[in-house]
Length: 68
Image (cartoon, rainbow, N blue to C red; front, side):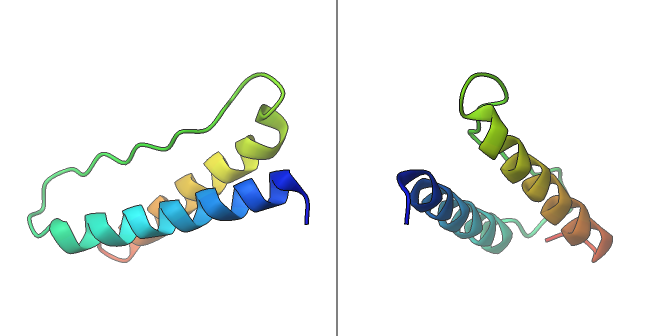
């Protein structure tokens, strides 16, 4: 497994943990801001732009289900 794949898996796992923690903490119908640290330019942008799109898709799907 390459270092880039390992890093991608770690970031995905951390994102899942952060989203799970945010969903357990948020009880009210107020806006929840989700921050994701990904490169959108430079050498890492090629692999990380896909991760950004995945996060946006996951958030959109969760909002369609009624949010957290």
